[in-house]
Length: 123
Image (cartoon, rainbow, N blue to C red; front, top):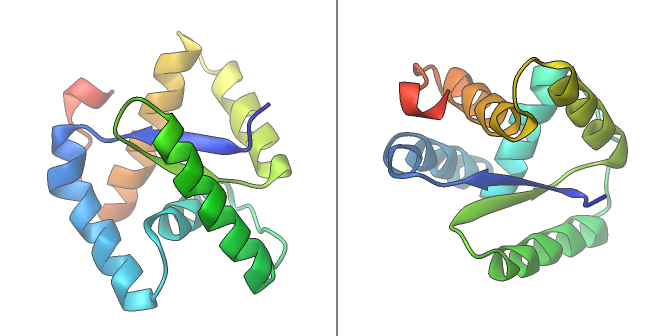
């Protein structure tokens, strides 16, 4: 299974969430994917192992490479294997279609973290 989570960028996301994530990233001297990864980890209370600077750089390069492969506009976030298992187990236990649960969980987590209501089109 892939070590990435894919967050699709719709017009509302680009207008409302992305600038706030970018501001946090600039303030902390980190990347978008680092900020999003921290938000997602915090949602589950997951604490990742510390990573070396070489591993961080390797993850950033892999995320950029994966973003070029994907045909739609999205943000790619590389996650730990244990978190990935936890995340997908949660998604699979939710009622409804798994692909819809995947997208809605990611969007709801990011919107709630920023303190905004999730647009109904993203539920």
